[in-house]
Amino acid sequence: MHRLIEFIKRIYVLVIFLLVEGVALWTYASSSPYTEAKILSRTTAVGGAISNTIGSVEHFFSLPETNRMLTARVAELSEQLEAVGGGEYSRVDTLAQGMSERTGGHFRYHEARVVSLTTNRLRNSIILDKGSADGIAKDMGVVTPKNELVGYVVLCSDHYCVVQPMLSVEFSTGGRLVDNGHVCMIIWSGQSQYRVEAKDLSVYSEPHEGMVVEVRSERLPEGVVIGTIEEYELNSAKSAYSAVVNIAADMSRLDNVLIVENTHYGELQELQTQLEVNR
Amino acid sequence: MTLMLLFLQIFILDELSIALWLRPMLFPLIVLLLPMEWRTIWVMLIALAVGMVMDLAQGGSGLYTATLLPLAIMRSSILFITTRRSVEAGDQSSLFSRLSMRLMMIYVGAMLLVHHALFFILERLSFAMPGMLILTIVCSALLSLIIAWPIVRFLGSKIHNK
Image (cartoon, rainbow over all chains, first blue to last red):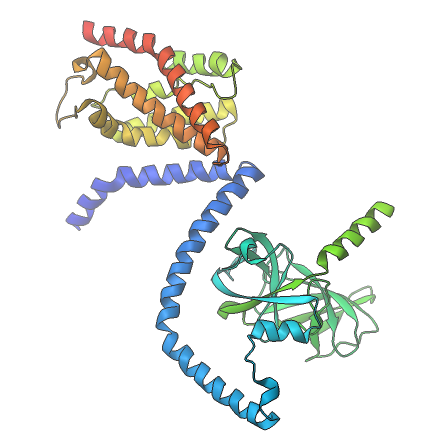
């Protein structure tokens, strides 16, 4: 105890300095959007680099497990290859290339790894290890390898990008009920990290438990799953349904993800701008 | 003295628009010229008060405080680096009274340079035009030192007379 008091006596000036300096810097950083963006991008880059290093170490130690899984997967695929007759599938495509081909050309997939992520805030974010130098741009969609929605890219540096996941109160995207095609708006209220809300569902949509909801957005191809309906209710005016949707992707255990690029997105944006101008 | 320096900074120097790269700042002198024998915590509290006054007066939102506080911590190290003098424990005599005017100005110049570098880097938060940034830091620190010269001289003579 005596030593502890001595230690505190020795460092209290430094501790007070760090505290007061931290408060002053924080006040300055949040004083204008410019300082906020500049300091955020610097701290994100530093934080990203640190998390990336830690992640690489963790990744290194998990290599035996990854090897075991890959070996099992190779064996399984070899069996499938044999079953379909060999030659036709002799080229081993990466998951990203395979998915690019499956979606018919104008969607391109980029593999990325999660550097850091948060799930316990109202405005959560995910940092990925791909940036503008790898062809990543704002508004690209992010999905899991199982084609489940994660979020959209909102910010890019040269080697990293920040994703706004579904678990952000600022997130919104279009949704569609797979069974009958009725559209809705997907938002997150911040109450549970496993559920989002589907709003403005038509009264004719007849939602029911277990119904699959997928993304309807020009940023992503068809078939990207958001989740399944857990409960639903008609609003008091009886004009629309709202539903609670169980998120398909496990947002707290993301590691490898795919960034989806719509090569026609610029064209679509231009059309939208023209439409706005003509109005 | 403190009030005079604050008045000079807020109502005269900050109102001058000589050039974008020439912005003299004298208020760090309040922290630099406090007796070296003072404990760091008291110097830090005074730096905090001066920084807050400047932030309120100039709308700095913490910028002045954030750049003035490190000076309180670095004072004795920079004094040792520039003049090879250190404050001995239990030394009650004024260290400044034992410094020659030349050494005093070297110490003040080094501290002003550190402060101006911190201030302009934090204000811009960008290294897009490094030449312009370095020019602003060096020229502003130099002009501050020139303006500070008679003030330091006057204070020095007062200390020596005691």
